[in-house]
Amino acid sequence: MPNTPPYAAITLGSNSFNMLVARTRGNQPEVIAKYKRKVRLAEGIQDDGTLSEEVLERGLDCLAMFAKMLDKEGVSSENVAVIATATLRHIGNADEFCRRALPVLGHPIEIISGMQEAELIYQGMVATTHGEGRRLVIDIGGASTEFIIGDADKVLLKTSLSMGCVTFNERFFNSFPFQQLDFDDAQKQVKEVLGHYLGELKLLGWHGVVGASGSVQSVVELLNHRDESATITPVVLNRLKLEILEQEDISMRDIRGLHPERAPTFAAGISILLALFDLLEIEKLNLSGGALREGVLQRLANRITL
Image (tube, rainbow, N blue to C red; front, side, top):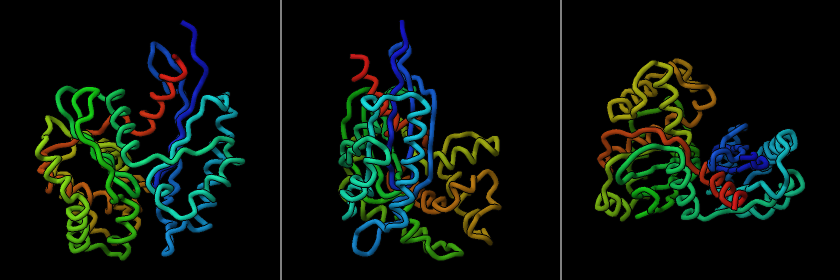
């Protein structure tokens, strides 16, 4: 069977910008190149609800790099999807960002709703993660967290809520050294944001929990570095919280296995995970094989191979 032409899924998250380039082989997308940059778009949201010029330029610079890589990988313009999430959903100058990005990247940006994002995250998880039974999928992004419960391909509940590792970092972990009170305040906020969804999620129930995105990935990378089980548990999270509280430098360089790029939002991510484990009574969580970008990639693959 001849290979399909290459295609690319670009996702503009509140924390990271990502690009996957793939070809379809055996009816499945096979990733041939990955590009990623920690843009931390949500850091640039100003008091008036617009994105600062400095962070806007940071985003455009990353898109210029992506444009060069698209040329390098030989991806034609009709085979590119560019998806933006929470920060671009909410800022007041999203239109300006999209207008200035068009000549840089050469492709229009589609700003999707939280519900569309949740749907794509679930599709990406199902396409890449083995497992049976009802699953709860949690994707902690920079400015939003998606919750999806599904059985196989069927989504039973989905929502996108306004909490993320970048926004929590700005609100609760903006003064070093960090304290137990910071984690307590973060947990109260998680409970408030969850609202009635806390009861709805627990009522539906699940057989297993899968986590996606950088906050979960950072913990799993750390556990792998330490040659420990990659399953996240309350014991693991509480131990990491204690390590965070013991740090004498904001770089958290003494936390063994923590990548420096992950450090700025690590405490905030751990705080959200701890709160969710407690409120939803989660016993263990495993990393998803894929999420939003893989969902976008699968959607592209389906379109190209029709």
